Image 1 (cartoon, rainbow, N blue to C red):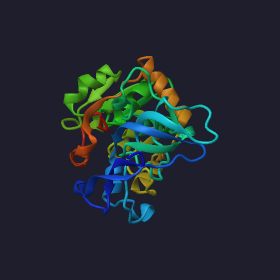
Image 2 (tube, rainbow, N blue to C red; image 1 turned 30 degrees about the vertical axis):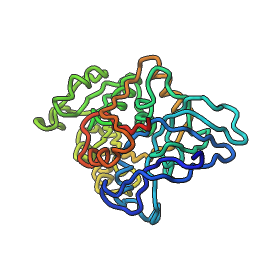
Image 3 (tube, rainbow, N blue to C red; image 1 turned 180 degrees about the horizontal axis):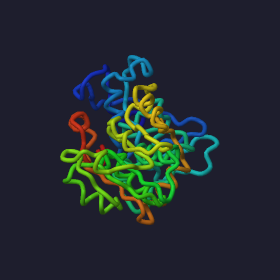
Image 4 (cartoon, helix red, strand yellow; image 1 turned 180 degrees about the vertical axis):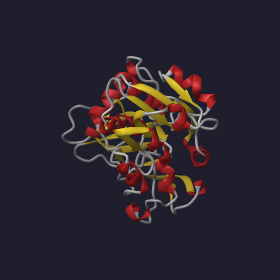
Length: 314
């Protein structure tokens, strides 16, 4: 039937087992919005955190369809939409932090929060980019990374980290990538100038002083590597309030950045351009069908050491 679709529905909070594929009404396309036939959806740690109830006060009891990253084809354009039309391939992370309901065959989204998909990659790869890519780019903007800076990226092989490495390098920074030894060749291939294995080295001692840390894991002790006047950006729990990190950093003259990513159509277009000209590689660790969403969330809960995980609809 044309008015229903498959979507992942969680009728309660809990572990991956609460996720079920069900038939639900297809969303409608309002003014300023487009309806997208989704071909792939990215899976992010924030999806799993919300599924587990971390933002229960924000989202209420549900039922919920989680997911923000989406890539697909426009099938309908609402009133007032002039830049996108049916048949256009698009990607984005609409509505964040409100629900986008991206784990579904159709997604409605504000047209201004989408961009045309990178031409040179498949939808599964494009769906891995929006939330992680905008987090990386916007965080680097907040940090103020510029040519000549020495930047330590912790969790450098992960979904956000491997993009931070490339975007910081593109700004002319010297990049120190912290990750397991198994990922060092991968990171060198992305442009990392130095690589450090956190499992066998005292990172702060080995790395020495840096202008900025972009921490994609949550290791506050790395603030000790930041020079006075430098910046420590903490990606996990960015929406949380100040902690002891701010106190320690303040005593050392270090600024703390906790940036919550925001939808940004032009920012997505800039990322797509970088992908198409070969300046940005998006690493997809696994692509699973929508029906395997429970397995996908089990992987996220265990922690993915490299790249992104994606759900596909076809």
